[in-house]
Image (cartoon, rainbow over all chains, first blue to last red; front, side):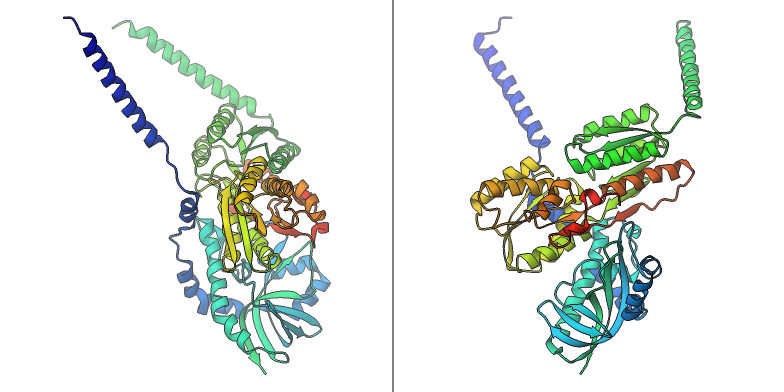
Length: 215
Length: 319
């Protein structure tokens, strides 16, 4: 049987057509372009409900932990005697490094109400109560209650700190800031972060867990 | 059917030869130093060079043989390194993963071959594959940088974020830590967020193009120091180095110098030498019989800024 040139051309065109469609299909399914903000959003999706977890431990475990604090003046005194043993006895730390977190309590007289903090005179020391920058892991880690290896996803573990800080910023700080004034007496429980190698005891910064004003 | 006999005999001989070879290799290994493979994501970044060299040198100090493998940010090449390490009889792998998800399979290959893997600095998204993961607490470090950033920009103004590798968990831990602070200030407006793969040249190009669209930015937060240096170069070229504050992360040598010279505002000091030495020590403990390692061991990150830079040395010095 003789094939006409036009039929050959048609067959070739069909073959090339199928080839191009197949290539297009393979190409389309091989490459997936995703906007960066979508990828970021995916990374921020967490099934773990940190707020519910923090609400669940707030009044019991966390409150109990922060009722069991070291007096801040005793802690300073202890540092002045032996830094390493004070870190060993009193600090909580997640892993390896120079930074430790301490639960502290105290009472002092307000000497300044600043934009980002309230300055207290506690004995002979000046202590800064943070009212603006309530961030980071000080409250979570000083409590000693939450362990990183209990969380498969480190982002879940970090979200616990965010939930604790949010609650302090929303429930503790606004009422305190609206009432506090110079000369008030303030009782506090909270957490401090200190660096063993670069230890600075001047004006310690306390992230508050509870604040009480008595005029 | 008699022609099967030679094949059977050949198979038997081959099997016996393999058995003898394994036995010989095992007996040869007894009395020889343990071999440790140091597989790192990239040697194109001085931070990872310090990590890899410290791990290898400390492994040698502990009496092991050590070899460094460079994955060149390529998981396929990383797979080749793992396969080589396994077939060459390495006894442990000190590993800096290329990709939090893409590197899991490689760690599992080693686990199947009963070779312990100790991850250094970067995390993999599995808690049942590596023997232990010694990780920089990038999130906490970037919370500290975020606070400093807010203070320095006085809580308002336009800024840019330059991300690292999209597939690396550290990229997102750093970004999330930073945003956990900065996003609380609505007058701080992020006008661009782009990745530059932890690469200095890419960051310079990214910064150059961003500056054309947003010439009025006040700050740049970069996911590592290499990118901070690249962004700073672009700002110098555009005559905006005085106007824009640059923040990095790593504690690399050139950035510590730049902070001293008031060019860069701050960085998060990681401790690659501490991480590498811990990983090598864990390998020794493993060889001595320890098996109950914590899956994740965070290593603290400290913020270095223009006020405290004189207290620090690049890469955390010998700490």
